[in-house]
Length: 114
Image (tube, rainbow, N blue to C red; front, side, top):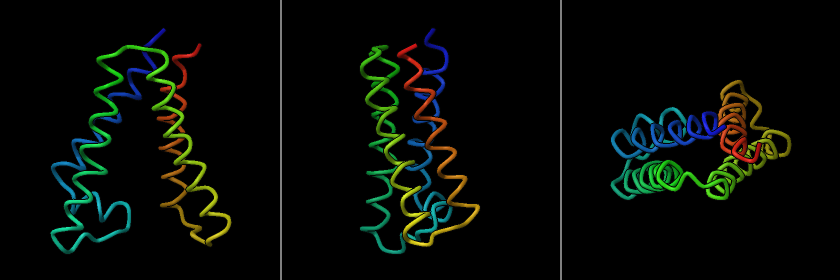
């Protein structure tokens, strides 16, 4: 059943589109203000193009391996954010929401293994 992995891929595409088209708004959501052109470029590239391509790659390939790798990357981001929550003192509801979103998308993509 590929419904859940495809939902994770679509979520990745949507987030990529938001990063590409609205880098300043995404910056505010993640707590970083890209106030110079290079910062805006970084948001468009990383939160935009990178996520967009990962999601589209999943949707086009329809490959368990591709879904799994992208899902593992999302889960790794959630793990790193959890480490920051514990060790860096970034304890906030906003950060917990980030952990939940990254874990949810990651597990949805990894569900291709089922």
